[in-house]
Image: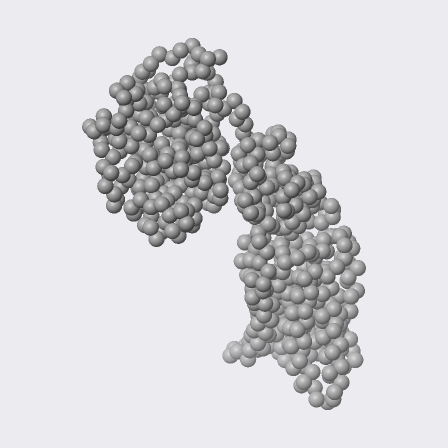
Length: 623
């Protein structure tokens, strides 16, 4: 089939339709009079692929091109950044045609560029934005390295042509002569008009016949903008839908179907994150198999493609590492995802993320509870550089913070008994104090866990218990709770009200204590190393060791006044303190292991409560 003529003007029946997904308000480009008869070959030419789409990322809408996956476009009429504000946007930023309210800037070190043709410039001597963009691409601007954001406020033709050049950075150097004969005059004439006005555009240096053809094409491309502005609809037009439509129209002028003979695409790309040096993880949805999707994505990403996360049906993902020579494997991803995915609940124990180092997937048969954007965030976290010693202050701070919270709660529980107007019978005072301490600990631990997990409290053990093998630890936890003093009233009176108060007080104390140490503190160390899992191998994790040690220190410190205030016991209190300290440490570590293997802190709460009640009964019986 003969190649269609690229040098014909755009006609109304060639307008590309706007995408249905995502579905912005429809922008109807006005009809244009036919300016050249279409040939039979042109009428039969296949439609060019729709490469432009709009999707949400980081809570905002962005425009993307399939062939420029690391470049996104932000369109907002309010964009007018000062230079200081532009530098706060981060690196790899390009401001277009007024989005930067300062003179043109090319800062290669910071990768900040302001392609401006407004304030602070002599318009007669400064290239228009579209011309600057074209020259930057041909000068080797590395838009394929790192994530870039383009900012624009008004998608006039100068801006949209600049966007087209930047989004088509891979194809521009490879354009054939016929395509260049269309694109370069378009950019040159639009630049002359933007700088000098339409009256002086004839001095742009184009031959008369090329000038006439190019003016016709520009008029067709800009007609929709002109009509919308004349009708008053420009300010309410959906900028993203309008820009996509004009970008497709430019495609139709510059390219033919032969240019896309090897073009493939994935049905939907959710986004990407960096997972290492010059590597990215891409989440997508497609009906094809993982290896076909991998092949399609490699055409866009090349050697940067580190992980493919393919969603076949909602929540069912396949993970694939395309390169067997990459300096990472998928095991780190499985470990992280099994900790944060709510559907990994240990029922059965094999319902978890897993597979080989090159390919694996989400839990079966339930799938994952993670949405694609959440999955990408966790993949980025899994392969983020290890903080090492830089994380030490934060970890020490968490341990010290838990001790401080426990101490303040003890003090508040004691002070509350002496507040004016507080009338508590003497036999209930100790139980009331324990209940108050437990409530304070529970509230603080809940607030810290909620803040630290963005509401995903199951990461901190707030979930239904799973697994059976964890209960082998129950006798050890129960026995270790017996020598404790901090969570018990001084004595148990035989009155029914006192018994009920003691049961409630020790229960609330157990809840608050475990929420703080096995919930928040244990969860703060959860991602610092390997942890146990339901029906998995037995070992002591760093999280279990730290939470056990810190809780033992807290309990011994809270029990110390009891031992010191009983001088009649002589030196026997030191033996009791040593036994209690050892039991608290062993019990704390066992509680951490129980929390990991059951995925829940509630079995530990029940065992600590039961051990405290038995210890209280034994102490009351023997005096």
